[in-house]
Image 1 (cartoon, rainbow, N blue to C red):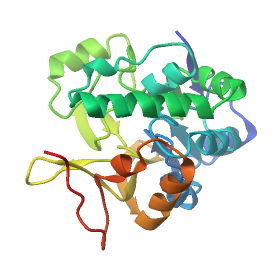
Image 2: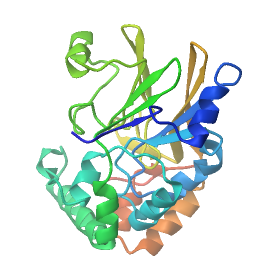
Image 3: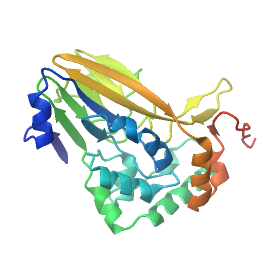
Length: 280
């Protein structure tokens, strides 16, 4: 199983981090589920650049208006990236099962078209880049270990929720020991206890959601991520949301050439935008 460790053979930057660890905190940013929304990713770029290390937890390009531009950004950033389920499909190493999604058939067909469009926008170099993503990544400091994955360490489609029973977590993390277990996939920000460790989900940079009082799923115009601050034996986890321009996202969608742009934008909400109605 592809796996990567950071901290065992440290780079110059990592050695600096280790040398100063006792007198200054180390900050690690976690981003996940960008989903081809470069507008959202760029809105937090200056904030996460303050971190000593950034780890991307996968699902980077599919289902959004800027798949190739997002991949170019990540290639330049050189952040270690976990292989998400949609990354695996775009890399040509898996097949997306859209029949599992609970949605009307006409919407499912729109998703099929969107996935086909995304695949047509990337080239062989992009697929090789995605294929280089790891199933899990470990980040080790002097006092802490962080295990990063997409859905879970054993599957990039498995969900870990705030309601997942403790005994199920013991099964999921069997044979894995870390102070922090970090994954995405659900698009829901979360911190919960697991024994003496913590489980964190930074949420989604590019496709966050919430359910409104009427039971409808909406996409808020903010980018979600997490910042871990490590100092000695202490650990702090901040779940963050940064608002950005809905108009900028709308313009990116209209320029992209993606199929059904109005359908994709329908559930996004931001100040000043008229509510969009769903078909009955």
